[in-house]
Length: 214
Image (cartoon, rainbow, N blue to C red; front, side, top):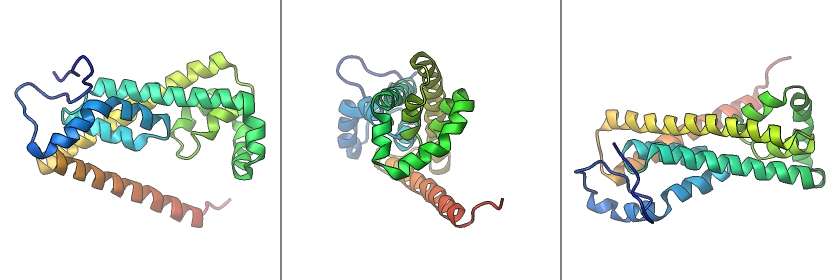
């Protein structure tokens, strides 16, 4: 079983008997020092991409899937808790200076008031809304204790789904191309993510030009 090293070395996490490829030495050094901290920092923002990559690296043994998921959970939870606190304290003044965000908040507010649990759990998966949604919950007076409980559950679900998605993406790449050295593996992950991002952006562009008929 692959386990993270103890002490100040966070990575790499390799199966016993395996050795690193020479051209992966620099990448391994970066992962040794920044691996899980990078996941934590990346998921503090809208970090689906970094979580998918980390999950794929966990499949290859460079990271521990458990620690990837835990880092993502902590980053996602901490980010939304901060935005919720800022919303309670500064939210109205912040939105007053940003008309576009204010309009988005006004559209979301009725649903939040009627279905706060579904809103807090689900909006994490709505790209582009994750930043404003916790702030809106703070503005609308959601109880801090209730928000913490729902936010923790949502962060857990989100971290599990995207880390496992990355893990199985790594497995699919290995099935298609075999076990490659780290540089080629990272290139394939990047190409796959670019393709997915392009498809999502293309769908959003098409949708914006072809709104559903009322």
